Length: 444
Image 1 (cartoon, rainbow, N blue to C red):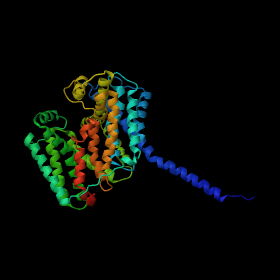
Image 2 (image 1 turned 45 degrees about the vertical axis):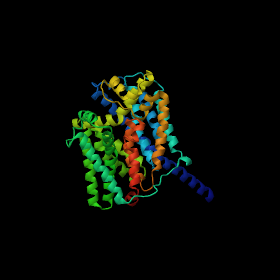
Image 3 (image 1 turned 180 degrees about the vertical axis):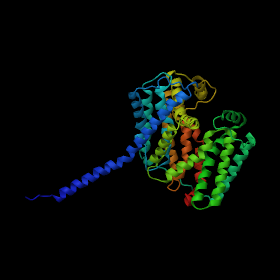
Image 4 (image 1 turned 60 degrees about the horizontal axis):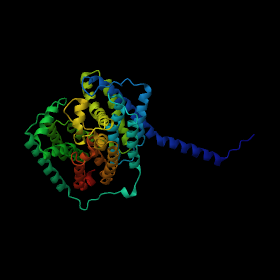
């Protein structure tokens, strides 16, 4: 008894099976991203409960609803993951990293902390934030031909002239900081910097304040990456000189201002540059490292030193920005209050009982400006900012440019969107890349 085999039909079935398996494989990275995001969200949620206990005597950290039902925790997880599903994980643009950082350091904190805080609950608050942030991500992923603009400098400066301009500005910044704050080379204790910050605010001029922040967030990290580029080309002497200059500048700024973020900004930029330079699945690598770090620290919480470092780090980076936004929402929307110009000081006094400044980043700033309308307006400005930063990307500089943009992501999570251009140096980042265009073509 013979068996008839239709070769063409068998071949067609094999092709269909392979095609379906390829479709499954193509979705694996995105599924893995969602898995990593789930780990991060659960980890930050666990830390939030620890932070509520650790800071329970501090006003503003009382969490009466922290013992949530599993169903409520599941809803929080869903709100957290919806925008994450649309984040681009492979083909890199600087705006993609900016979205990822604002998502991690701003959005997640809002969603996780809101139902646990001692404020009036509004059921539609988290869905509205989720929808607005997700829409920005989706629209940014769409290619608009009329927005696909690329900047090209008319005349490229020589490498020697580029470094001459850089070091003139460098020495000018150092001298101005010394002039306004004295020759202070004694860094404050990293857990107690507020006295130094207050003295800096009282003693510095407007120019001195701008120069200190821009130097710490832009100039020092940029020089650190230049040192790495020299090192990769075996220019050891030049690499050492630029590296030492970068470290010294960060040290001077931290000693004068007490800004902890300045102390770590250069190493953060280097870390992002290394991740982005590997090209494939940059988001997976960033989230993997974040998840490993979060759970390693969590398991080590019984050790007192790790406990202090981990709780302060998670609180400052992931929890406080979201808490501040939710307090802004309660004050300006739930209570129909006014006072946008002094919003950070008002919220700090009412909810934390201190005379500090509770800055609330992208979303909180919008609420303080004009309530719901302000939220819509700020999300539109965020979209325009994403398109703006991509204008200056080239194939040669995109990974270095993206790494430098990481400091802007931190600023967006903690300050108003208008401050990132001057105060936190986005315009200055762009100027540096124009000045060093020829150098980056050769070394990047």
